[in-house]
Length: 197
Image (cartoon, rainbow, N blue to C red; front, side):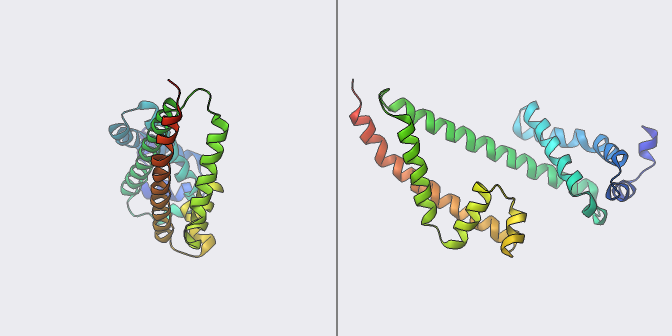
């Protein structure tokens, strides 16, 4: 433990840029608890907080060669932890909302309804909605959601800023959500009225 304190953050980052696993270990021990506590405070789940810790330190290891310019490691890790926590929170919220909507729709539908057909129709509706997006938004959406690329990778490939990618994604998702909600509003009453008592 005393050995760790011999290295200030700048020294640790320099060693880390040289692929030092020892430096990474020091960094992990020094900041792990802070990241965990921040994530736990928002997510209220030890398991999810651990996932955030893993995500933050995985990103640090992946970007280790770029970190020797970081002026304040404390601030850098705080921002990385905050972003990873917000991402986890958004995924959790979206998953919960999607599961609730899906469960509610299934509860309303008669047992005799062909679920595979409904899911195929839903998938078809999503494709048709994406086709209505402006070309740039559709491309960003496809690269992010179908190809699984990060905003940074999309920005590089399309030669646009990361902020532009983020705006395109937000606008596209908002449009898609609205269209699908309108579709559910029209489809669910029909399914409901077709149900046998």
